[in-house]
Length: 405
Figure 1 (spheres, rainbow, N blue to C red):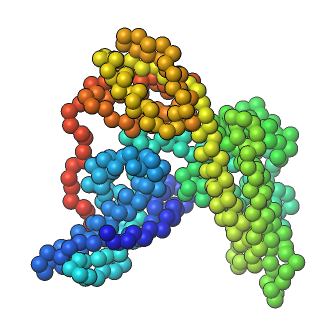
Figure 2 (cartoon, rainbow, N blue to C red):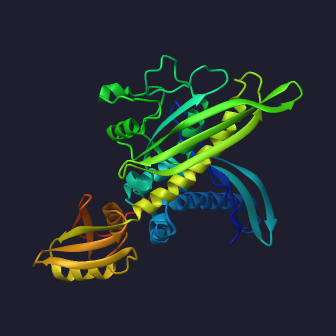
Figure 3 (cartoon, rainbow, N blue to C red):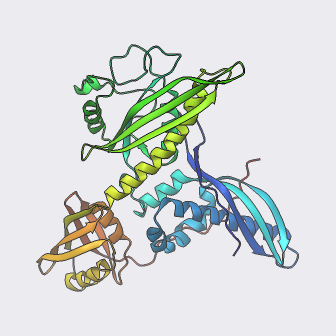
């Protein structure tokens, strides 16, 4: 098997305020044995092989290793046969004949939004809890501005913050969700929320809750002229200091401080270069820290009820319990009520009820299936259903060749 080289880089194809498509770009290799002298045919198949690997890597980047391993049948049956559907564009970087094979290197861009939708529709990816919804409130003050710029208070100055624009773009590229997007900002007073100061975190958390956010990230960007010099050019220092708050607990859960120094850039605000560098570093730091916190939060131990019902109940209930014992994150499982056609169980699980439901949906059973009919913070309802004949598979279609020429 040829080695796979894939650079994971998420970016936006268009501006932040416009409709954008999140893509994953990188390079993969492909190979195909040469039949007779059919080098063009072998090259075509090798390119298809490389694109399938690109889509496979994109699939793997969206899910955990456990989920990836449990859904190989879906990957090979439903995704890879239609790999070209997810390829936005590609180019062949090179090709060579080697020991009877044709080898290629292909750079491609994969439509992550379309792939994510397919996995969400198949209940393989839970988009609702995979990433938190974040409300950002970043005030910015530069040498060019007499007062800090911010949008959530009684500020007569128009809101324009380079640091927030860059940070939000990067966060969206990393699949985080925003409570506020675009130029239209909500007026806190509309919700009877008053900020007593720029950094009134109590008011910020109230606003975050009414906007259905999971977290609030609040802080400031400051820039000033550096004591350093480079001839006649001015050098600027920028510092971004942000704090993250979990709206469920109401507690501060992270702090991210980033600094940068850069010379002034012609045609931009003098401090723009330093702010831009600090913002890129801040977004990376925030992404890592929020991911770590959110993963830990979602894996907190929870106890909830699981209600199970359906026809041919007893043998199916026994089969379900056997499969549940194989889910590693179940800490304890005790029957609470058992009847002839239903049961209630107490489950202690390292994760949320929704994550438990997602794990159960990955299980397969002989002769029947399961349907998760309801998920709340305290319970999960499961119903046995008759298994339909046959496994839905994607239609076999020829790979459509796409180029960016």
